Length: 106
Image (cartoon, rainbow, N blue to C red):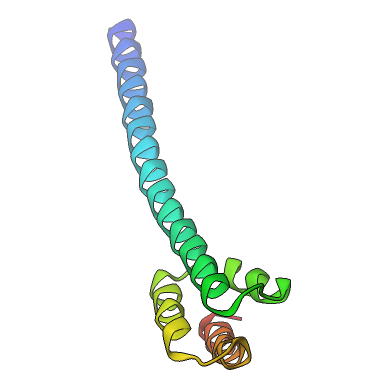
């Protein structure tokens, strides 16, 4: 009788491990897709800035690469077309970064 319980326990553990692996793989794929999308938006934003304003100071690219929120990146992308020059865009970027920092828990 003890052997049957042991076999059942081992079978349950194996099934649990497999279910965990499947869930982990799915979560990994989802996170990878989100991260890839974010990186794509960042690269499009940097390209748009360079196209409109010419070479940008590295500090701007560094600040943009630190932003993970896709809505924020989308909003900055739209600002490229509204700003007259790189100085105006950098002012908007500074405000956005400050707003993002306020949202993060301490």
